[in-house]
Image (cartoon, rainbow, N blue to C red; front, side, top):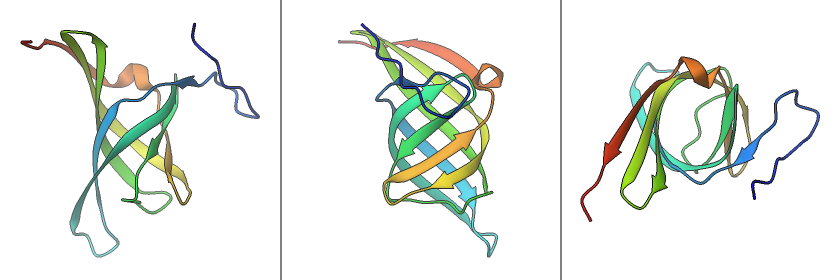
Length: 108
């Protein structure tokens, strides 16, 4: 059973733990990389738990690895904008349907 998180947001959010790797440019224009875990996803965004925090308003490139079965991993990657940061992570806004998607079979 999938629990749907509802709040003042217009999109349903779905709890999902997936590996997240992301990168952005600092205010000094240097390239910064971070890693974390998704807390939840919606059709138009995600919340990533991490201590590597881009600034609000920063464009970020995100790559997610979602294990969908014992031997299959779904890779999602795309660009988004940081809309909120907290002490535990950050939220991004972007239509996830526009992200690239690839399935991978992994060897046991």
